[in-house]
Length: 213
Length: 271
Ligand SMILES: [Fe+2]
Image (cartoon, rainbow over all chains, first blue to last red; front, side, top):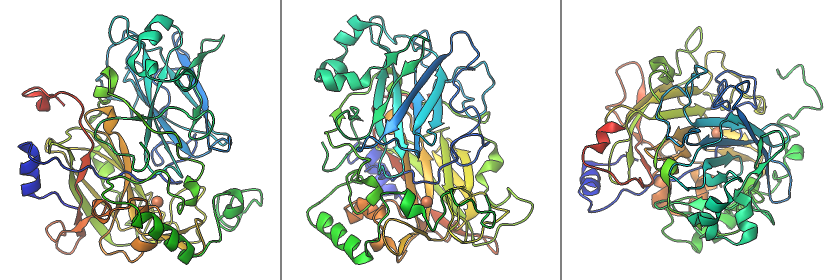
């Protein structure tokens, strides 16, 4: 499809917005689980926002499950987050990491047992008193469009209490968005695409999930 | 792993239906009838249904609770930045990655990435991946007995220009069989991965070629129930993109949802 000049003029003058292009599944062939350099979407150190050897590196890990409770071996996850001070990164270099620049974005594929791992830092609050979270987007074979969600850090319970999104959810649904902090400092966050423990997925203005909202 | 040193424990094309519980032996007619029933009861939808049973793999992989409407906050109103540090200009040409020329029909795919208000998405990452001219991916899970091409990986990336434009030189991919049902074939397509000016616009989709006879049979394409919306995934043959004695050409514009950011006068130049 080609957007013609009339459509473009109408959109730019605010008369009629352009309708978004539909999404489609990522399919099965987006990349190997790991160990390959730039084959399809995964790339070297894509899941290492910071070097895991850094003292402030935090391991963010979890498993992606389907509605049967079985792990999904062919999902791809991306995170996007503020830095430790709550600043929004706008540095290039995510695809060719120099080992020092924090770009705030990472990509991980799950392994054969559905597990993903990122090395990152705890995001700081972007405003005083705001609950810090990591934004997560999920793609998978069998999943016909992307799914957005948030991974909240568990510590600042006062901020979590006040958070607009969390406070609009029932307690059991709310808990699906809050990561668990383990003794070694790592964050555990499982994703359930369907079922009892289904993760809360977010629909932002401008995108439709037909027959679903 | 090559076909001849076959480990029986490994997944192969011939036993993948065993390893993929969603694969079935249903007939094309069964799938068509299911798709027809869903389409008959739908109207005006702009995105695929995540719950679309004719695509068997979707059965246990879609949310059943309603999506939670949310307003994007802070980090979600921005996108990661990509630039020349990330992507070399040659990575947009998929025909020069090997020692020689890949087999197949050389094509150029060109278009623009826009938001709903017609603003170009500048300096953003576009990634593609695709099967080769025989319908085969360079991938350990693709065991379709069609030849790999040593001169074609099927992977490319680029950064959009100031007018939101992108361009790839590649080979026209072939249709390929899959295990959704008996004698299931995907229409020829190129997978696209896209970023916008805010992260809520992040999307992955597939571009198709005009007039493909497999369109009506494909549950992934037909998961979008409205013809007008399906048409948005089909490139236009453009003779101005074809070049003399070198390539045929296609044009495909992509519109991202949103953006949700409040744009200031002059702000468009900053991103
Ligand atoms: Fe494909």
